[in-house]
Structure formats: structure tokens, C-alpha cells
Length: 343
Image 1 (cartoon, rainbow, N blue to C red):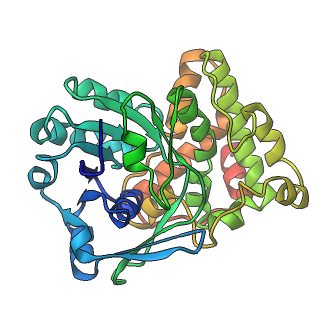
Image 2 (image 1 turned 90 degrees about the horizontal axis):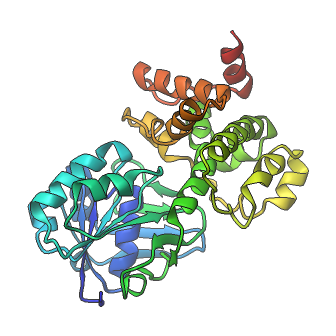
């Protein structure tokens, strides 16, 4: 049973983690952020500002939230650990949890991709590990802005695996709604279909609302989703509904003319103008992306099942190229992406 006095650690607090931790702290939960020194310094200097698409704009009191870069200080008294690191850092964070957290601590993966909870389970056999999914986008303020601001730029409820009494009551607070789901694997594969768009935002450099409103970009996303659905079907994977829509209908929706799409996909387009994608942010900050965990998951299915995925591979190669060049988002056009594959 997890009550409001439980100690919550956000392990690897970036944009999503700071937003989650900020909402929890504002609701009176006992929260520690385990974050990079840069973010710890920003929070200690000017606290944390939390805003969202519904026009809430709140500042966390300095004494209501602790932040540290020291894993021992953060993890040693944890009751619940929310893992929000990028997928490539999952195994490393699992090692820190194994070394420093008590075995009674429940671990929840709130990460992109479909395999992170399994990685955590393998590394943490003594802990209860739950899969989770964050459906919304969070934008972080510019470097040097104080207080550090994290802004939820789209909507949706966080989904977590069922099975731990009191956990949704502990984690579900204003601005950060949480619900349980019986089939988290289906939820994660469903989210992956939409996360295939992260790479297109990164390659274009466009805000998400502008990119998704342009049919030329949606055609590329639709082609990737088609490839993903074929590969998933061959692997007997059934993704969950996306914003109430059956996955099989998603490519048809994406291919509609812009004016029809705007009318039928209002929930999908309910995005703050500031929002981009975490993959865009990674290229902007010259960090490794999660392309291997997103498009790479579809390419893995493609290789195992023989389902072709040429557009997904093309997008993957372009993101990897941008990572290697290290000059930020390359600002490609839809035509440039498709022409690159034809050459």
C-alpha cells in the first residue's frame, strides 16, 4: 500500500521527469529529483515552474522539492522510483537502483519505447517493476531561464501497469493524471506508432503542430505506420487504440487532405505551439537520440518477420546521420527525405 507519505524519486529527471516531479510536489507528495548537475543547479537557483495546456502556471516552493545529482542520496530511502531516463541509459540507471535503493521500492518505467520495463526487470529481480506510458509532450525552458520551466504541451493520461495497491492514488495529481491498464504491452506498441513522428519533427526542425498539420509530412508518417502495422501483424502484436482510433485506421486519417484532417483530428492537433519532440531536443543538444528504440523496434520486427520497411529505414538512417554530423536538426523537407531514399 502506498500512501501520501511515500518517498517518490524521479530517476533521471529531464523534461518529463521534472514535470512529473513538479506536479507531485505541488500536490504535497515527498519528491526527490535525481537529475543532471545542470538541472539540479537550475532548480536550486530558482526553484521549478510547472505549466500546462490547460493554462495552469504554478511555481513549486523551494522547500517542497529536493533535487540532487547524487544517486545514493536520492535512492537510499525511495519507496517509489519513476524512471524517466532515455532508453539508452536504462541499464545504467538500473545498476544505480540495484546498488542504492531498498528492495521494497516499486520501480515504474515512464519511458519511450517498448522494452525498457523488461530491461529493468532483468536487472532488478528483487524489485516490483511496472511498465508505464506518458502520452504527452513536455517542453523545457531555454538555457539560463529562471525559474526552470517545464510545460506540458499536449494532453493525455499517464498509463501504468496494474497490481500495486494505492499507487494511482499516490501518483495521480492535478496536471498529472494516472490510470491503470491491463495490457501495457499493447499501450506501448500503440504509442510507438505515433512516436514514429518524433523523427520527422527532428529532421524538419518544425514545431509539432505545424509539421503534423502538413499532409506532406503526414504521408511519410502514414507510410511508416503502414510498415509498422504489417510487421506487428506478422509478429502477432496488437497495438492499443490511439486517441480512441483503431490503429488500422490511423494511416487513412493521416492521408486525408489538410482541411479534413484538421476537422477530424482535433484531439491529435491539441498541441501547444511550442511543442517539438524529444528527438528534436536531443539533436539540438547534440545528444544521442532514441531512434534505435522507436524506428529501431519496427526494423527489428521487420528483420524477424521479413516485412519490408523501406521508409522506416530511410528515416532511421537520416536521424543517425544527423547524430553523427552533430550540427543539430538538419531542417530537411519532405521531398528531400523521400528523394534521399530514391537516390
